[in-house]
Amino acid sequence: GFALVSPPLQIGDLSDVRLQFSPGDGWAASGRNPKNKAVSARPAGKAGKVSEHGSVKLKLGNAASSETKKFFLYVRSVRQGPFECNFAEKAVHEWQLDVDWRKHLEPGSLPL
Image (cartoon, rainbow, N blue to C red; front, side, top):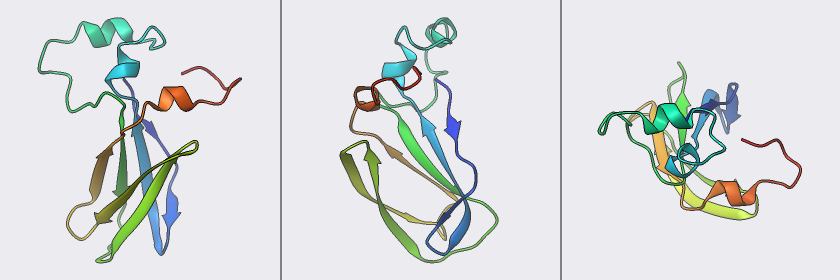
């Protein structure tokens, strides 16, 4: 599947943070994925690190921080986390989603 990347966000005192959502294997293998043929045609081992329900990454731009951040992620009414990240250790943190986000889309929203 493809990743969706947010515009720069402010999280607490940190600016230039980007959120990246990857939809996961469940969506990639579904008929709703316009790239379904390309995904299924990939050789084994070339798919990269993908989870069934997708993942979320936080990436810090050029700013520096030694503070650990803790937060929750909401997929509609379902709360996941707490997640922790320390940008002093690495600039990108990734967490796998435990819920199928496709079941929580609002009725009438654009199909993905």
